[in-house]
Structures are given as structure tokens and as C-alpha cells.
Figure 1 (cartoon, rainbow, N blue to C red):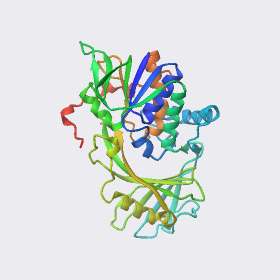
Figure 2 (cartoon, rainbow, N blue to C red):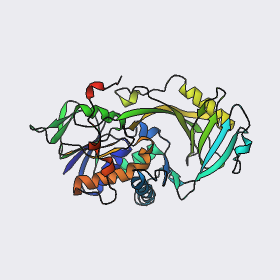
Figure 3 (cartoon, rainbow, N blue to C red):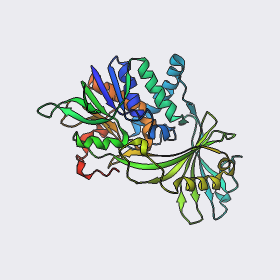
Figure 4 (cartoon, helix red, strand yellow):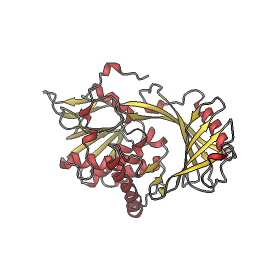
Length: 372
């Protein structure tokens, strides 16, 4: 069996790994580079139980456990290291207008400024963890390669169907037909391009901005902030100190149109400067440190907020895995494992994919595409 995966982000990499682990011949087609979009620019925050009570609960819990297994097993077997560590997670309040000391319920952190106060502990090392998302995605792809998978740079331009339109037989890559027994669409928000080739629901991009500082705080807690600005607005940046001595901060989402090429994503005007102003509001030490990267990415979402994971309706041999929103890095392993089980064995013993069935939503009209 030969499986062709369209997309080299975390979902494509994990799917490639679990398929190769089953002995399947796998080729990943990636337009610009592994982890080149959101999978390389996300926070890498993982949570065991933050999806509890939703349709995502079992997927998230299983994937959280897989992350720990992969970090241990692939670290030992292949010497792969993506900075995985279990951490405490805190909520922090800050204001550019007034003193919020009365809201402090936890001990202060010495790397936060006087305007920031630790409000609550919202995750323990048993329930929250973090990793470097680019290193994880590339590490999973390297592990897939070592099991025989291939990664090739190219642009997927279409899907070829059988004469009756009921079977996907090949992908068109840079004008060339590439036959496969199964095709997986895992292109993040760019999976919406596949709506012109297959009967799929819409997948949309939510843009987010981030900055990475060369700043190693005295403690490694992940922070979720609520900042009251001088304009009276509330902003909610997230802060993830990493094992490599850097600190990642993200926030300021928008619905700016996506470019056709993921490598062409640019920050919204003024967004990075605004993010740096927010950083100075809660941690002047961090704001004064060296900026290593300022970037933007588009997270894939669907109309109902749940990912698309499963077989494409009405077309045999075609599958889709995308739309995980902010939880793509968390749910990458469980999604990849489930896709491999579904493609090879026809069932998914670890996760029930029924809530994520692509057929639950109406087909998207490709004439509505708004890419630039």
C-alpha cells in the first residue's frame, strides 16, 4: 500500500510516522518545508483535561498520553529531543490602568513586573506540558523517515478521480500525476484548496502573532494572561518558557485573508509592536531581552469548531485530517495514529472519530475562496 500525504505540518508528520510504523509506504508532499506554517510557530502547550466536557475530550486525553510516550520512546530509540517537559500553568492578571494586587492569590514570580499578579494555578505538571513545536514536528517526520517514509517538496494542485468520480487515484503535484492507494489532505487551513477537488466542508484560517525572546526565566511556568490596557481593552497573551532558554509569547488574533503560499504569511501591521508593548506591561525583563523571531501563522478551524478527521464523503481512498484550531500540536499524535488505523485497518480502536466525521458539515463552495 502506498499513501500520499498532502502537507508537512504536525498532522501530516504524525500520520506519516504511524503509517510507517505499520510498514506502509508513505510519501509526504510539502510545499515549502516541514513545520513551515503554524506547526512551527505555535506555542507547543499541551493540556490533559482542558477539552473535558467537549467532543474533543477523549482525543485530547489520549494524545496527551501519547506525547509523553513519544518523548520517552523516541528520545531513547532515536535520540530525538524536542524539549518536552511537564510544567505548572498559571493565570496572571495585569493592568496598565490600576493596581490589581487584590487579585493575587499565588506567590509572585520574580521575572514578572510589579503590574502583574499571579491569580490562580490552572494546571499542574500532571495535567500540562510543553514542547518546541517545530522540533517536535521535524522530529516526528525524521522518525517517519527512519521507518521508510519519504518527504518531497512540491505543490499539490489537484486530485485525480476514477471515471465515475467515486475513487481518488492520484494527486497532481507540480503538474505531474502521483498515483496512490490512499490520499490524505493535511494542509492545515490550506486544506480549503482541496474543496475544489473533493466534497469537503470549509476549513478557515485564524491568524495569530508571536514573538520569541532570548529570555530564560527563573521558573518555567506557562502563563495565561489577562491584561487591561490603557485603552480599557482586555488582551490575553500566552507565555511559554522553553527548555532551550527562550520564551515564546503569542496573541492578537485576526481573520486576515491567507496567501496562497504559506511561506508568504506576514504579520498584520502593528501587531508585533503591540505584542511587545503587552510584554513590557507584565515583564519588563523579557521585553528588554533580545528578540529572536517575530512571526504570524494561520490556525485551521471549521464552522463548528471541531476538526475534520476521517474519510472524505463519497470518494473512496481520500481522507482528511485538519481543523484542530489551537489544539493541533496537542492532538497531532492521536490524530496521526487514528488516521493510520483507519487507512490500514478500517477501524480506530484508540479514538472514536464519529464526532469528527467530515460528512457532518455541508460541502464548501470553492467559488467562495478568499485567498490572496
